Each structure stands twice: as C-alpha cells, then as structure tokens.
Image (cartoon, rainbow, N blue to C red; front, side):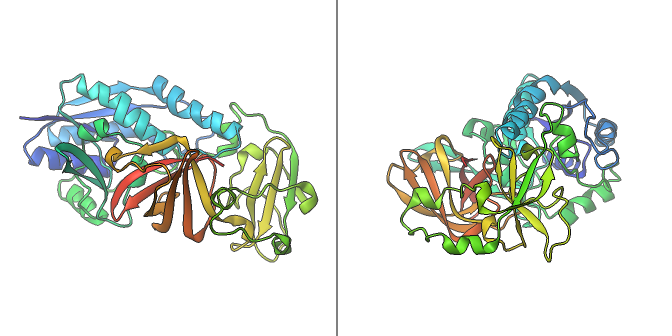
Length: 391
C-alpha cells in the first residue's frame, strides 16, 4: 500500500483531499505545518490561523488517520518572509504564495513527509498532474484545475519535475461546491470554513504595518501624471522587444505634486488603496514608484495609459521550465497563453527567447505589469514555465 502525507491546513480542500485518497486505498497521514507565529500587522478575525491546527486535528480524527505536526517557521521566515522584505526594499512586489509552494510546501514540508517513508505528498490545490513520455523519458505535466474559478496552477508555477513526481492533487478534477458538499456529507469540521486569504500562512495583513518591521517609513511626494503626457511619446515599433518590455522612467517634471505618502516601498503598480487623494473625478491609481527618490507616481482612472504595458522581460537567470523538454532555444519564438497574476484570464502572447532572457509581448496591453511578480505561460491548460518579471 502506497503511503501519502496530506498537508492538512484546517481548510475544506485539504480535508476532502485526505478523504479521497483514503477512499482510493492509500495509507494516509495528515500533517499540519506551523509556519508563522508573529501577529504584527495581521488583521485578527480575517484569518484565524491559530484555529487551523485544531480544525486539522478534528478532521484527522473524523477520518481516522494519524495526525502529525511539524514546525517550519524558521525555514518560512528565511525563505519566504525575508525574501518578501528584500523585494519590497528594492521596490519590487513579490508573490509569497508562489515562493511558499516552491520553498516550503513542496520542499521543506515534502522532506518532512518523506522522512515518514511517504511515497507521495498531497495538497488541496485545484490543479491536476499527468504523465507524458517524450523520447523514452517520463515528464510530469502540471494542468489547470477543472474549476475555472478556483484553478491554482499559477501558484505552483515554480515547481520542478522532481517535486511534481512526488506530488498528488486529489481535488483538481472537482468543482468547489462539490468539495464543500462532500465535506458536509462527511460532517467534517472544516466543511463551512471560509477560504483563507492574504499571505500564505500569515493571513490577511495591513501590508505597510507588516513591512514596517523591517522597512522604515519615509515621507515622500505623490506626483500625478496626466493622460495628456502620453500624447507626446513616440509609439514603440512592434519589433523593438527591449523598448516594448521596459516601463516608462518618470521624472518629477512630468507631472505635479498632489499629495504625500509614508514610503514608496509600500506601494505597487495598480494600487488604489492608501493614496488618500480626494477631490478627483475618478479614483487615483499608482502607475510607478521611484524607490531611490521616494516618489509615487499616480494617474486618474481605471484606464489611465500609465497602467498598461505591451511587454515584459524575464531575465535568463529567472526563467524556470516546469517542462524542461519544452525549453526554448536562442532566437526561437512561440505563441503561448500567459497570466501575470492569480485569477487573471489567460492572455495571448508571443515569447521571444534571447540571450538576456525571455521577452513576453502581449497581443493586447496588460494592466498592472509589476516587477517581482511571476509571469506563467501555458500551452492550452498545461503550465509550461514561469519567471520573475524583471522590471
């Protein structure tokens, strides 16, 4: 009998994953991982993570499976939270959930599970895994979950073949309402629990308060860039990959001061909350940050030109292939579907492989392209590769 360790989070998805595996004949062990102790900046009540272990334990008892506990908080702080602080300090916006999966759930946690002689590690992610043979070698395909509203393949865009080999995703073929129905029929304690929100294992946070543990607040200007500014910019030719992928470098002389902030590091492209600018016909959005000079540039309206970009660059050192056999060759180009954030509908784009990295040029300009975030590219419903947006 194959042994599988399920990461029981206390939520409904991992609970049903454990049940399904037991029904399929696996020897199932539930393991809860504690990754965070600090409550600085955490909005209590939005993500009651202190209750999670109790719910996980109740589910394990109900399913009559062994329950284990592992504290990975040191690894989580070093490999996820410290990375977050470093990225925000550089003026980039990281995605801690992607890092948490690569560094914690499918690395540190996986090692703890395999130490229990497990054959596999399972999670409650809405995605699927298949095997394919190419030139006599087996590769593992990471496929989108069948519930279009819950597909979580993007969060796993940095997984390797060795991590996928040992992974199981038991609920990837199900719709969320069906998962809740199964949990309710089994009277699992987690059946009616809300889905977790915010930073993986930390919860919903007041980001500036959270970041001020390491980053000092500094008063600076908010400068508005008017839409008319873009009328004077010469359009970039389609073939100029480098220029199409660069954000505009704004200067204070391009606009006027309309307010102040407490630190450009605390803002990200497309952000509306926290600007505190009133008296405008439409809401104001962050279109750029200058960390060195501590300036936040903002524009009025959802469709402000400064919010949109045609392309982006993934530096060669940041390119990751989930399917290494599909790796692009220098000077090759290929059409793919791309997303730059969770839940974003897949966008048509062309990938160009160059010595400096992979340029992604979208068919339509994209809103809120942000340095530090992950872009993931798909062939239909299969995630092929990903990388960190360089600027």
